[in-house]
Length: 379
Picture 1 (tube, rainbow, N blue to C red):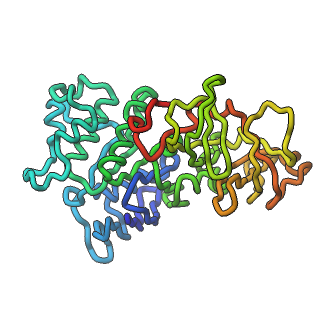
Picture 2 (cartoon, rainbow, N blue to C red):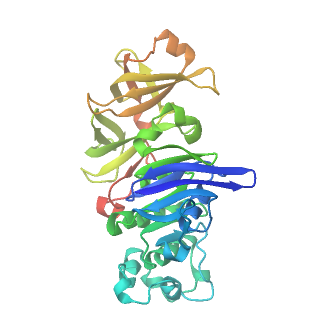
């Protein structure tokens, strides 16, 4: 486990956060700019000394104000990838990579050649950082962090300064770190699309505190967290499997515990595990199964929670269970207060969730639990 329970006064801002997460997979710290995400990972790295509290990694205390323990950054076994890379501009990629490697080969669990191959750096070794693209610089920064033989990698919004094409270049490499090297990662981001694709566990940060901790699928479907996650893009994430392709009409089917979703063509082989993000604004609700309608996804559902949007009084937020009994799968819907009252949309009511196939576009689902190379064609 990674245990963080720290307090720190930074001017008018007070960091007071407590959470425990598995020391495995990718843990995403998610929240708006200024929420305290970077301060938290700086404290884990030893770059920021808390006023009080403790930080424990796999049973080893890195910091404890009560026990007067503060292990120096270089001895914490933590790799750090910054937003802008921070490479040495005057030396080659090769020399950037080997900086910080242990002198003893016996101490090197992760070999130079393995990292170069994993990150596709073979053609870049003789270049200097000035001749690299933004995506290439970040790959080198990740490689340098890996070669320091870390027990944990911290990534502070490593894709924030990149355009869409460079982000698409880097993401598969981050997935491969998780899938092939099994090094745990704490990943800072305010982009929910990145978290949906990469994260196993989500820590929602608000005003210096951990507002919620849990699996991505669980937290994205909670109504009380929608103000923090973002109302416009609010929606649930479900796990599914590619179960069929309709080549004649350019469609695919994603199977989950409650049935199947018809979506735009997914360029992935059958059996591929994916995460699908369904936005609340794309879900309609009916009290009877509609007929003669263009919407292809009509799913039996049960209303498990109803809440009026505090910032938009005409709007009601619904939490729906579209899974089978004993295997809940949560979905969010947004309707007007008038529609809610006229249809008597109350907790426990049986309804049908309606989702337009074209609402689930190529950005709505991503492979999960494997690299894109393993899964086949990209989305």
